[in-house]
Every structure is written in structure tokens, then in C-alpha cells.
Image 1: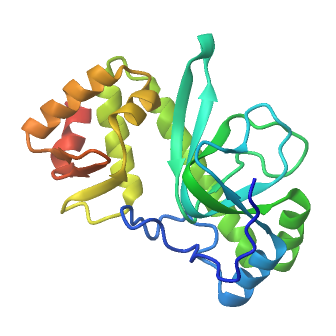
Image 2 (image 1 turned 90 degrees about the vertical axis):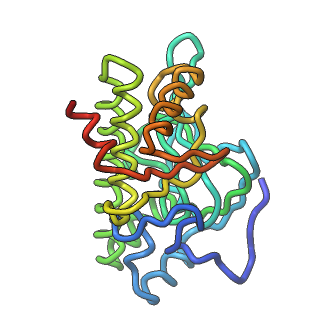
Length: 242
């Protein structure tokens, strides 16, 4: 693993250009003032991960969190019969290492880099010191844990749907709500692929393609190779209740 010792640290408060999600309480560093931010950056350890390299592995002893400074990280769970389920993707400003960040436990799922990722590792001792010296950091951490809990609750609700179409529409609605954009206009869901959607709801890529084609024919969404835009959020949400 390559260790990063660059003097200039990427802005941790801004997600990637394709996905702008301000004000959701998901970014642990964004709420901090300069003094607290400098303290966090000095306390943590910078590291660089290459494509498909693991930041943490399911079942391994846990030790703190990894705050993403740049790049994309996916969380996965090893299901039955060797099947891998993608739980979520995380961007600059998010962190991986939940749900337990203190105490003796093992990771409930894995997190690996999609492309090159720069992250700040805060081990448990570092987190305890920061909580003691920075109330702002403690509050931000609690808010982020709440966001993560909601995200995984959303996944559980999605997987409970009886049909793939129902599960996919519910997932897209929740992703739109998390995007925190103006719901009266188009909502960009950023880097999202049919394969990832299929892994998130436990469906085949072919079934996802058919459902997305129908939604696109109805003008509800627009899709590209790695980007999806919801054009009519009200119509999408209506399909959940119909």
C-alpha cells in the first residue's frame, strides 16, 4: 500500500463533481472549522489505496474509521453461496468503518476502492482523543452515524420488496432523497451503473435494464454509461404508493 505524505490535502468537504449532496449531515469533516479540521488532519494517518484494494475487510478486527478524501469506495457483504451484495458507495467526505467505531468488534462488511482513493485513517485511540478535544468532531461523527444507519435501513426496506421493480423504484426514491437537491427539478444520482443497482437489490442485471428502460421511456429518468438523472421525482415516488 502506498502511503501518502503530500503537503496539500484534498478538500474533504466537497464530494466528486458528479454528485453534489450538501447539507445531508453525511460528511464528517464538512461541519468542522479550520482549527478542528487541522486537528483531525494532524491526528489521522494519510493513506492511498489503488483500485480494488481493501480499506477494511469483513470479519477482520476493526480499528477506527477511514475518512475518504478523494475517490469512491464501495461497501460489500459476502452473502450465501459466495454471492457478493453491494451495500452502498461512499465518496469524498464520507467515512467507512461503521457501525461500531469504538470497542472490540469485527467488521460487518468490507470496503474497497473503486479506482484510486485517498483516505485519512483514525484509529480508536485517535477518535477518543478527538472526541475529548473537539465537541464539533463528536457531533459530526454522531450525525454521520445516523446517516449511515438510515442508509442501511433503506437497504433492508428495499430488499424486503416482493418484486425487483418495486425494490428498484424504492431504492431510486431513497437515493434521490439522500441527494438533497431541489426535488422540483432533475436530480443527478451521479456514478451509478446497472450492475451496481442489481447488486444492491439482489436482482439480475437484465431485469434492471428492462425496468430502467421502462422508466426512461416514460420520461422519468435519463441514463448514461455511468450516470443517471431522475427527471420527474414526483412520478417516480408515485410508483411506490401505486
